[in-house]
Image (cartoon, rainbow, N blue to C red; front, top):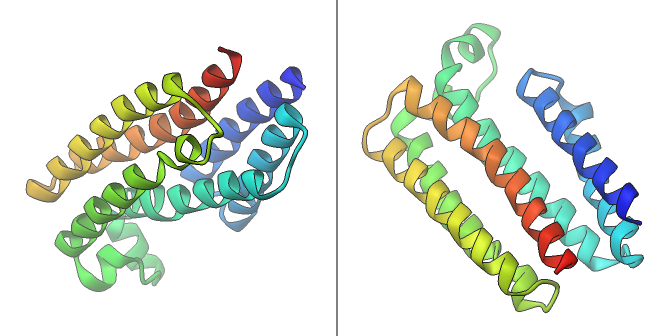
Amino acid sequence: ALPISVAAAGHSAAVMLGLARGAGLFTLLACLGLPLLAWGGWVFEPGWTALLLAGWTAYTLARHYGLALACYRREEYARAGLPMLPVSHGVPLTCLHILLYTVLLAAVSYLPATLGLSGGIYVALVSVLNLGYLREAWALWRNYSDARARRAFRYSLIYLTGLFAALFLDRLA
């Protein structure tokens, strides 16, 4: 079970990096399936818990990767005719959305502990990750720059990887 989880988590990170490079819908669908595989391989019960993790991954991909990336790539999206939020409604509103989504994500990130799926190690690690993500989102909203958007995007990669690592480490303890 452990090798399946580690392999799936590593593959998930590689696939998410593919999304950052524009691999599109295929990558998003692949990212949904890998948390199911990883959780099922670790605890042998790929029921609603695995669905929660898959939904969590999809939410993070769609809201955080997409919005921060779209902010600093807005000219490219506009040239391609893609109506991403920064193109259609502007960067300030997009940054507000990033902040609000991050607040919601921080609250939802405690669900595994609330549901008894993780313990104190997870809560401690996710609290540190949440503080960092909230700081990035706040700074982006208060004083936008393409460099801050890139930093927020990079942190979103660290954040999601950190969440799954926290679940994994908590499970080992």
